[in-house]
Image (cartoon, rainbow, N blue to C red; front, top):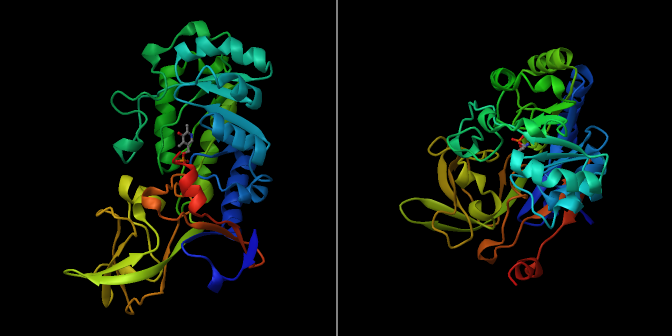
Length: 379
Ligand SMILES: *Cc1c(COP(=O)(O)O)cnc(C)c1O
Protein backbone atom coordinates (compact mmCIF):
# COMPACT_ATOMS: atom_id res chain seq x y z
CA UNK A 1 0.00 0.00 0.00
CA UNK A 2 1.32 3.45 -0.84
CA UNK A 3 -0.04 6.94 -0.44
CA UNK A 4 -0.62 9.05 -3.49
CA UNK A 5 -2.48 12.16 -4.56
CA UNK A 6 -5.27 12.47 -7.08
CA UNK A 7 -2.92 13.93 -9.67
CA UNK A 8 -0.34 11.17 -9.24
CA UNK A 9 -2.70 8.18 -9.46
CA UNK A 10 -1.40 5.31 -11.58
CA UNK A 11 -3.30 4.77 -14.84
CA UNK A 12 -5.54 2.99 -15.41
CA UNK A 13 -6.87 2.92 -11.87
CA UNK A 14 -10.06 1.99 -10.07
CA UNK A 15 -10.66 4.59 -7.38
CA UNK A 16 -13.10 3.74 -4.60
CA UNK A 17 -14.52 6.69 -2.68
CA UNK A 18 -14.88 5.39 0.87
CA UNK A 19 -17.37 8.08 1.88
CA UNK A 20 -19.72 7.06 -0.96
CA UNK A 21 -19.41 3.44 0.15
CA UNK A 22 -20.39 4.48 3.66
CA UNK A 23 -23.38 6.37 2.27
CA UNK A 24 -24.66 3.11 0.72
CA UNK A 25 -23.90 1.15 3.87
CA UNK A 26 -25.91 3.59 5.98
CA UNK A 27 -28.95 2.92 3.76
CA UNK A 28 -28.46 -0.82 4.12
CA UNK A 29 -28.09 -0.48 7.89
CA UNK A 30 -31.35 1.46 8.12
CA UNK A 31 -33.08 -1.38 6.28
CA UNK A 32 -31.55 -3.94 8.63
CA UNK A 33 -32.60 -2.04 11.71
CA UNK A 34 -36.13 -1.22 10.54
CA UNK A 35 -36.98 -4.54 8.89
CA UNK A 36 -35.07 -7.00 11.06
CA UNK A 37 -33.53 -8.62 7.95
CA UNK A 38 -29.91 -9.65 7.82
CA UNK A 39 -27.89 -8.31 4.90
CA UNK A 40 -24.94 -10.07 3.28
CA UNK A 41 -22.46 -8.76 0.74
CA UNK A 42 -22.52 -10.79 -2.50
CA UNK A 43 -18.84 -11.27 -3.32
CA UNK A 44 -19.76 -12.09 -6.92
CA UNK A 45 -20.47 -8.42 -7.55
CA UNK A 46 -18.08 -6.65 -5.21
CA UNK A 47 -14.98 -8.16 -3.62
CA UNK A 48 -12.56 -5.28 -3.10
CA UNK A 49 -11.55 -6.80 0.19
CA UNK A 50 -9.23 -4.03 1.27
CA UNK A 51 -12.43 -2.02 1.80
CA UNK A 52 -14.03 -4.70 3.99
CA UNK A 53 -12.91 -3.10 7.26
CA UNK A 54 -15.30 -0.31 6.31
CA UNK A 55 -18.13 -2.68 5.37
CA UNK A 56 -17.91 -5.18 8.24
CA UNK A 57 -19.54 -3.01 10.94
CA UNK A 58 -22.61 -2.51 8.73
CA UNK A 59 -23.39 -5.94 7.25
CA UNK A 60 -23.85 -9.44 8.64
CA UNK A 61 -21.46 -11.33 6.43
CA UNK A 62 -20.91 -12.46 2.86
CA UNK A 63 -22.59 -14.73 0.38
CA UNK A 64 -20.18 -16.81 -1.63
CA UNK A 65 -20.59 -18.88 -4.79
CA UNK A 66 -18.03 -21.59 -4.20
CA UNK A 67 -14.79 -22.49 -2.47
CA UNK A 68 -12.73 -19.46 -3.41
CA UNK A 69 -15.31 -16.87 -2.43
CA UNK A 70 -16.07 -18.87 0.72
CA UNK A 71 -12.39 -18.73 1.72
CA UNK A 72 -12.20 -15.04 0.87
CA UNK A 73 -15.23 -14.37 3.06
CA UNK A 74 -13.66 -16.21 5.98
CA UNK A 75 -10.24 -14.59 5.62
CA UNK A 76 -11.27 -11.02 4.93
CA UNK A 77 -14.77 -10.53 6.38
CA UNK A 78 -15.04 -13.12 9.17
CA UNK A 79 -18.75 -12.74 9.89
CA UNK A 80 -21.46 -15.08 8.50
CA UNK A 81 -20.58 -17.04 5.37
CA UNK A 82 -23.43 -18.29 3.18
CA UNK A 83 -22.45 -20.45 0.25
CA UNK A 84 -24.53 -21.37 -2.76
CA UNK A 85 -23.25 -22.89 -5.99
CA UNK A 86 -25.12 -24.23 -9.01
CA UNK A 87 -23.28 -27.47 -8.22
CA UNK A 88 -20.76 -28.44 -5.53
CA UNK A 89 -17.79 -30.75 -6.09
CA UNK A 90 -16.87 -33.79 -4.04
CA UNK A 91 -13.32 -32.59 -3.35
CA UNK A 92 -14.43 -29.16 -2.13
CA UNK A 93 -17.55 -29.80 -0.09
CA UNK A 94 -15.83 -30.47 3.25
CA UNK A 95 -13.74 -27.32 3.18
CA UNK A 96 -16.75 -25.27 2.11
CA UNK A 97 -18.88 -26.85 4.84
CA UNK A 98 -16.26 -26.25 7.51
CA UNK A 99 -16.19 -22.51 6.75
CA UNK A 100 -19.85 -21.82 5.95
CA UNK A 101 -22.76 -21.02 8.25
CA UNK A 102 -25.41 -21.60 5.59
CA UNK A 103 -24.99 -23.99 2.68
CA UNK A 104 -27.54 -23.70 -0.09
CA UNK A 105 -27.94 -26.47 -2.66
CA UNK A 106 -29.31 -25.95 -6.13
CA UNK A 107 -31.10 -29.28 -6.52
CA UNK A 108 -32.58 -31.96 -4.26
CA UNK A 109 -30.07 -34.42 -5.77
CA UNK A 110 -27.11 -32.32 -4.62
CA UNK A 111 -28.81 -31.78 -1.26
CA UNK A 112 -29.20 -35.50 -0.69
CA UNK A 113 -25.73 -36.30 -1.99
CA UNK A 114 -23.86 -33.79 0.19
CA UNK A 115 -26.06 -33.05 3.22
CA UNK A 116 -24.69 -35.82 5.42
CA UNK A 117 -21.03 -35.15 4.63
CA UNK A 118 -21.50 -31.42 5.12
CA UNK A 119 -23.25 -31.78 8.48
CA UNK A 120 -20.68 -34.30 9.66
CA UNK A 121 -17.93 -31.79 8.88
CA UNK A 122 -19.80 -28.94 10.54
CA UNK A 123 -22.77 -29.89 12.74
CA UNK A 124 -23.73 -26.22 13.22
CA UNK A 125 -24.20 -25.75 9.46
CA UNK A 126 -27.68 -24.75 8.33
CA UNK A 127 -28.74 -26.36 5.06
CA UNK A 128 -31.04 -24.83 2.48
CA UNK A 129 -32.33 -25.24 -1.05
CA UNK A 130 -32.46 -22.66 -3.80
CA UNK A 131 -35.86 -22.68 -5.43
CA UNK A 132 -37.00 -21.21 -8.71
CA UNK A 133 -40.13 -19.09 -8.24
CA UNK A 134 -40.64 -19.31 -12.02
CA UNK A 135 -41.33 -15.62 -12.21
CA UNK A 136 -38.92 -12.80 -12.90
CA UNK A 137 -39.24 -9.44 -14.58
CA UNK A 138 -35.48 -9.34 -15.14
CA UNK A 139 -34.73 -6.75 -17.78
CA UNK A 140 -32.28 -9.01 -19.67
CA UNK A 141 -32.53 -12.71 -20.49
CA UNK A 142 -28.85 -13.28 -19.63
CA UNK A 143 -29.70 -12.12 -16.08
CA UNK A 144 -32.97 -13.99 -15.78
CA UNK A 145 -32.61 -16.95 -13.38
CA UNK A 146 -36.24 -17.90 -14.05
CA UNK A 147 -35.95 -17.96 -17.83
CA UNK A 148 -36.70 -20.88 -20.11
CA UNK A 149 -34.70 -23.99 -19.13
CA UNK A 150 -32.92 -22.13 -16.32
CA UNK A 151 -30.55 -24.35 -14.33
CA UNK A 152 -30.70 -22.06 -11.28
CA UNK A 153 -32.92 -23.25 -8.46
CA UNK A 154 -35.44 -26.05 -8.07
CA UNK A 155 -38.91 -25.64 -9.53
CA UNK A 156 -41.92 -26.71 -7.48
CA UNK A 157 -42.32 -29.65 -9.84
CA UNK A 158 -38.84 -30.87 -9.01
CA UNK A 159 -39.11 -30.30 -5.26
CA UNK A 160 -38.38 -33.45 -3.27
CA UNK A 161 -40.05 -33.58 0.15
CA UNK A 162 -37.57 -36.14 1.41
CA UNK A 163 -35.09 -33.30 2.04
CA UNK A 164 -37.46 -31.48 4.38
CA UNK A 165 -36.15 -33.08 7.58
CA UNK A 166 -32.71 -31.55 7.01
CA UNK A 167 -33.67 -28.38 5.14
CA UNK A 168 -33.84 -25.26 7.30
CA UNK A 169 -34.12 -22.60 4.65
CA UNK A 170 -35.21 -21.67 1.15
CA UNK A 171 -33.35 -19.30 -1.13
CA UNK A 172 -34.52 -17.52 -4.24
CA UNK A 173 -32.73 -15.03 -6.46
CA UNK A 174 -34.79 -13.58 -9.27
CA UNK A 175 -34.02 -9.86 -9.44
CA UNK A 176 -31.54 -7.84 -11.45
CA UNK A 177 -31.14 -4.13 -10.76
CA UNK A 178 -34.79 -3.95 -9.69
CA UNK A 179 -37.03 -2.05 -7.32
CA UNK A 180 -39.08 -3.37 -4.40
CA UNK A 181 -42.17 -3.61 -6.66
CA UNK A 182 -40.36 -6.34 -8.58
CA UNK A 183 -39.51 -8.07 -5.31
CA UNK A 184 -43.17 -7.93 -4.32
CA UNK A 185 -44.15 -9.74 -7.51
CA UNK A 186 -41.44 -12.40 -7.09
CA UNK A 187 -42.38 -12.86 -3.45
CA UNK A 188 -46.01 -13.41 -4.39
CA UNK A 189 -45.05 -16.19 -6.80
CA UNK A 190 -42.60 -17.69 -4.33
CA UNK A 191 -45.23 -17.74 -1.58
CA UNK A 192 -47.94 -19.18 -3.80
CA UNK A 193 -45.75 -21.98 -5.08
CA UNK A 194 -43.89 -22.92 -1.92
CA UNK A 195 -46.60 -22.12 0.60
CA UNK A 196 -46.55 -25.62 2.10
CA UNK A 197 -42.84 -25.46 2.90
CA UNK A 198 -42.20 -21.89 4.03
CA UNK A 199 -43.64 -22.31 7.55
CA UNK A 200 -41.32 -25.28 8.14
CA UNK A 201 -38.24 -23.12 7.56
CA UNK A 202 -35.96 -21.17 9.91
CA UNK A 203 -34.87 -18.72 7.25
CA UNK A 204 -35.72 -17.45 3.79
CA UNK A 205 -33.07 -15.81 1.63
CA UNK A 206 -34.46 -13.20 -0.80
CA UNK A 207 -31.25 -13.24 -2.91
CA UNK A 208 -29.71 -10.21 -4.57
CA UNK A 209 -30.57 -7.83 -7.38
CA UNK A 210 -32.27 -5.35 -5.05
CA UNK A 211 -31.17 -1.97 -6.40
CA UNK A 212 -31.53 -0.52 -2.94
CA UNK A 213 -29.01 2.32 -3.11
CA UNK A 214 -30.16 3.65 -6.46
CA UNK A 215 -31.87 7.03 -6.31
CA UNK A 216 -35.63 6.51 -6.27
CA UNK A 217 -35.59 2.94 -4.91
CA UNK A 218 -38.58 2.45 -2.63
CA UNK A 219 -36.84 1.55 0.63
CA UNK A 220 -40.02 1.90 2.71
CA UNK A 221 -41.76 -0.68 0.57
CA UNK A 222 -38.86 -3.12 0.99
CA UNK A 223 -38.95 -2.68 4.76
CA UNK A 224 -42.72 -3.27 4.77
CA UNK A 225 -42.44 -6.44 2.65
CA UNK A 226 -39.78 -7.91 4.94
CA UNK A 227 -41.60 -7.03 8.16
CA UNK A 228 -44.84 -8.57 6.91
CA UNK A 229 -43.08 -11.68 5.72
CA UNK A 230 -41.22 -12.15 8.98
CA UNK A 231 -44.39 -11.68 10.97
CA UNK A 232 -46.42 -14.01 8.78
CA UNK A 233 -43.98 -16.92 8.84
CA UNK A 234 -41.76 -16.29 11.86
CA UNK A 235 -38.55 -16.81 9.87
CA UNK A 236 -35.27 -14.95 9.53
CA UNK A 237 -34.99 -13.05 6.26
CA UNK A 238 -31.72 -12.50 4.43
CA UNK A 239 -30.88 -10.18 1.55
CA UNK A 240 -27.64 -10.55 -0.36
CA UNK A 241 -27.02 -7.55 -2.58
CA UNK A 242 -23.76 -7.10 -4.46
CA UNK A 243 -24.32 -4.25 -6.85
CA UNK A 244 -26.22 -2.15 -4.28
CA UNK A 245 -23.15 -2.11 -2.02
CA UNK A 246 -20.75 -0.86 -4.68
CA UNK A 247 -23.30 1.23 -6.60
CA UNK A 248 -21.87 4.64 -7.61
CA UNK A 249 -18.99 4.41 -5.17
CA UNK A 250 -16.07 4.92 -7.51
CA UNK A 251 -14.57 5.33 -10.93
CA UNK A 252 -12.20 3.85 -13.46
CA UNK A 253 -9.69 6.49 -14.45
CA UNK A 254 -7.86 6.05 -17.75
CA UNK A 255 -5.50 8.04 -19.94
CA UNK A 256 -5.74 8.97 -23.62
CA UNK A 257 -2.76 7.36 -25.39
CA UNK A 258 -3.48 8.36 -28.97
CA UNK A 259 -6.15 9.89 -31.15
CA UNK A 260 -6.69 8.41 -34.58
CA UNK A 261 -9.13 9.35 -37.34
CA UNK A 262 -11.22 7.09 -39.52
CA UNK A 263 -14.50 8.72 -40.43
CA UNK A 264 -14.52 10.09 -36.87
CA UNK A 265 -12.10 10.87 -34.05
CA UNK A 266 -11.18 7.85 -31.99
CA UNK A 267 -9.40 8.10 -28.64
CA UNK A 268 -7.38 5.03 -27.67
CA UNK A 269 -7.24 4.66 -23.90
CA UNK A 270 -4.90 2.67 -21.66
CA UNK A 271 -7.84 0.59 -20.44
CA UNK A 272 -10.20 -1.85 -22.15
CA UNK A 273 -13.94 -2.34 -22.34
CA UNK A 274 -13.40 -6.04 -22.98
CA UNK A 275 -10.89 -6.66 -20.20
CA UNK A 276 -11.73 -4.08 -17.52
CA UNK A 277 -15.39 -3.19 -17.92
CA UNK A 278 -16.76 -6.30 -19.66
CA UNK A 279 -20.41 -5.64 -18.77
CA UNK A 280 -20.35 -2.71 -21.16
CA UNK A 281 -20.07 -5.39 -23.84
CA UNK A 282 -21.92 -8.31 -22.22
CA UNK A 283 -24.92 -6.64 -20.65
CA UNK A 284 -24.50 -4.34 -22.59
CA UNK A 285 -24.62 -0.92 -21.01
CA UNK A 286 -23.06 2.46 -21.60
CA UNK A 287 -20.90 3.80 -18.79
CA UNK A 288 -21.22 7.48 -17.95
CA UNK A 289 -18.07 9.48 -18.55
CA UNK A 290 -17.44 12.49 -16.35
CA UNK A 291 -18.07 15.75 -18.17
CA UNK A 292 -19.13 14.01 -21.38
CA UNK A 293 -22.45 13.81 -23.21
CA UNK A 294 -23.99 11.66 -25.91
CA UNK A 295 -22.33 11.68 -29.35
CA UNK A 296 -22.97 15.03 -31.02
CA UNK A 297 -24.36 16.65 -27.89
CA UNK A 298 -21.24 18.66 -27.11
CA UNK A 299 -18.77 20.19 -29.53
CA UNK A 300 -16.19 17.42 -29.89
CA UNK A 301 -17.26 13.80 -30.36
CA UNK A 302 -14.90 10.86 -29.91
CA UNK A 303 -15.22 7.14 -29.95
CA UNK A 304 -13.58 5.92 -26.73
CA UNK A 305 -11.82 2.64 -27.35
CA UNK A 306 -9.59 0.16 -25.58
CA UNK A 307 -5.95 -0.72 -26.03
CA UNK A 308 -6.44 -4.37 -27.04
CA UNK A 309 -6.50 -5.72 -30.59
CA UNK A 310 -10.16 -6.67 -30.39
CA UNK A 311 -11.99 -4.57 -32.98
CA UNK A 312 -15.02 -4.37 -30.75
CA UNK A 313 -13.11 -3.13 -27.71
CA UNK A 314 -15.15 0.08 -27.65
CA UNK A 315 -16.73 1.91 -24.71
CA UNK A 316 -18.93 4.03 -26.93
CA UNK A 317 -19.16 7.46 -28.59
CA UNK A 318 -19.04 10.47 -26.29
CA UNK A 319 -18.86 14.22 -26.77
CA UNK A 320 -16.84 16.79 -24.83
CA UNK A 321 -16.76 20.59 -24.54
CA UNK A 322 -13.02 20.65 -25.20
CA UNK A 323 -10.83 18.66 -27.54
CA UNK A 324 -9.28 15.57 -26.01
CA UNK A 325 -5.49 15.56 -25.94
CA UNK A 326 -2.98 12.80 -25.52
CA UNK A 327 -2.34 12.43 -21.79
CA UNK A 328 -5.83 13.60 -20.77
CA UNK A 329 -7.67 11.61 -18.14
CA UNK A 330 -11.02 10.01 -18.95
CA UNK A 331 -13.13 9.08 -15.94
CA UNK A 332 -15.73 6.31 -16.20
CA UNK A 333 -18.37 6.60 -13.49
CA UNK A 334 -19.76 3.83 -11.31
CA UNK A 335 -17.08 1.21 -11.96
CA UNK A 336 -16.82 -0.54 -8.59
CA UNK A 337 -19.24 -3.47 -9.06
CA UNK A 338 -18.91 -6.26 -11.62
CA UNK A 339 -15.66 -4.80 -12.93
CA UNK A 340 -12.61 -5.90 -10.94
CA UNK A 341 -14.32 -9.21 -10.11
CA UNK A 342 -14.61 -9.89 -13.84
CA UNK A 343 -11.48 -8.25 -15.22
CA UNK A 344 -9.02 -10.29 -17.26
CA UNK A 345 -5.48 -9.90 -18.59
CA UNK A 346 -6.69 -10.45 -22.16
CA UNK A 347 -4.12 -9.44 -24.74
CA UNK A 348 -1.60 -8.90 -21.94
CA UNK A 349 -3.15 -5.57 -21.08
CA UNK A 350 -2.23 -4.42 -17.58
CA UNK A 351 -4.98 -4.67 -15.00
CA UNK A 352 -5.99 -1.32 -13.53
CA UNK A 353 -4.47 -0.48 -10.14
CA UNK A 354 -6.87 -0.30 -7.21
CA UNK A 355 -6.94 2.77 -4.96
CA UNK A 356 -9.11 3.92 -2.10
CA UNK A 357 -9.85 7.53 -1.30
CA UNK A 358 -10.32 7.63 2.46
CA UNK A 359 -12.88 9.71 4.30
CA UNK A 360 -10.17 12.27 5.14
CA UNK A 361 -9.37 12.70 1.43
CA UNK A 362 -6.06 10.83 1.45
CA UNK A 363 -5.59 8.16 -1.21
CA UNK A 364 -4.07 4.70 -0.72
CA UNK A 365 -3.04 2.66 -3.74
CA UNK A 366 -3.91 -0.79 -2.37
CA UNK A 367 -2.95 -2.92 -5.38
CA UNK A 368 -0.87 -2.58 -8.51
CA UNK A 369 -0.50 -5.23 -11.18
CA UNK A 370 2.38 -6.15 -13.40
CA UNK A 371 3.77 -8.64 -15.88
CA UNK A 372 3.88 -11.45 -13.30
CA UNK A 373 0.11 -11.34 -12.82
CA UNK A 374 -0.32 -11.91 -16.54
CA UNK A 375 2.34 -14.62 -16.81
CA UNK A 376 1.29 -16.57 -13.72
CA UNK A 377 -2.21 -17.18 -14.98
CA UNK A 378 -1.12 -18.76 -18.20
CA UNK A 379 0.94 -21.73 -17.03
C1 LIG B 1 -25.54 -12.35 -8.39
C2 LIG B 1 -26.16 -12.84 -7.15
C3 LIG B 1 -26.34 -11.98 -6.06
C4 LIG B 1 -26.01 -10.51 -6.10
O1 LIG B 1 -26.74 -9.85 -7.08
P1 LIG B 1 -26.65 -8.26 -7.27
O2 LIG B 1 -27.41 -8.02 -8.52
O3 LIG B 1 -25.21 -7.90 -7.40
O4 LIG B 1 -27.27 -7.66 -6.08
C5 LIG B 1 -26.89 -12.52 -4.90
N1 LIG B 1 -27.23 -13.81 -4.83
C6 LIG B 1 -27.07 -14.68 -5.87
C7 LIG B 1 -27.46 -16.09 -5.71
C8 LIG B 1 -26.53 -14.21 -7.06
O5 LIG B 1 -26.37 -15.06 -8.08
